[in-house]
Image (tube, rainbow, N blue to C red):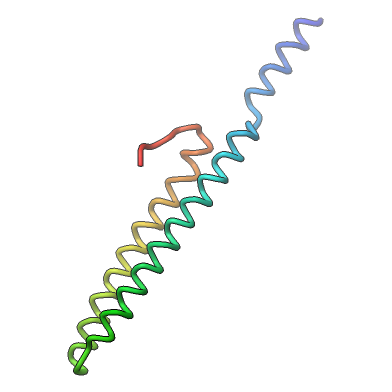
Length: 97
């Protein structure tokens, strides 16, 4: 009877969430979000700097189009990274950065 109870508790603990890995994944996720925020701010500063050099409406359209494309590319990249990140962390997989 005791063996049965022990094996049941061991199997249920293997099925449950490991809270230390969840906490680690949460901390890593926060770091990733901070890196994304930094990249967004850097791009915003570059855009503002490029706008200060604009001398015509044609240049304005060109600079704005260029940075809109960069912003969309960055958004797509970060969305993909975040979508892949959490499931891999919960499975215990780690990817080199």
